[in-house]
Length: 174
Picture 1 (cartoon, rainbow, N blue to C red):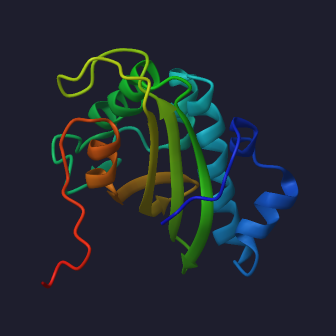
Picture 2: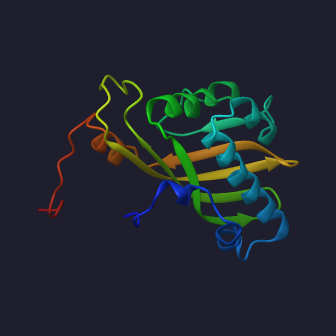
Picture 3: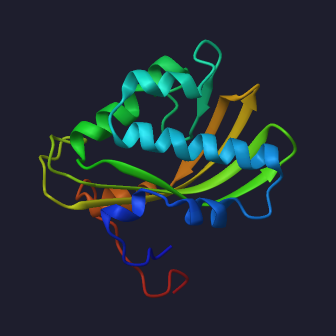
C-alpha cells in the first residue's frame, strides 16, 4: 500500500478524522475504535504505565505469526517500548476500522519512525524511515482489549531498514 504523503502531525487524529474512521460503526464499535486510537496517543507519548488502562492486563493475549514470542500482555508491552527507543519518533495511527458485533473490531494502522535510536536485528542505526502498515483484529472483554491478532508488512520493513535485500521482480511468473 503506497501511503500518501504525511507529516508527524497526521498522527494526532482530529475529531473530524476520528469521525471519518468510525463512520458507519455502531456506538459500541465506535467506542472500541476510539479506545484503540486513544491507546495510540498514550503509546506515542511513551506513557507505558498509562497503556495498562486499555487492556485486561491479566488475561490479554497477542498473536502474530511474525512474533510468536509476544503472547501475553506483559511480554507484548515490551515491543512498543523497544520500537519507541529504536525508531524515534515511534508513532502510530489508525487509518480505517471495521466492526463485528459488540466485542470485535478490525483496524488498519500505520507505524512511523526513523532508525536513529539503536541497533535493530544487528543493523546499526541508518536513519532510514520505518513505515509499516498492519491489520489488527481486536477482541474486547468489557471495555478493555482482551486479544489482539496482528499481521504486518514485515518484508517491506526489513527491506527498508536494510536488514535484508529483497529482489524486486518485474513479473514474478516469468
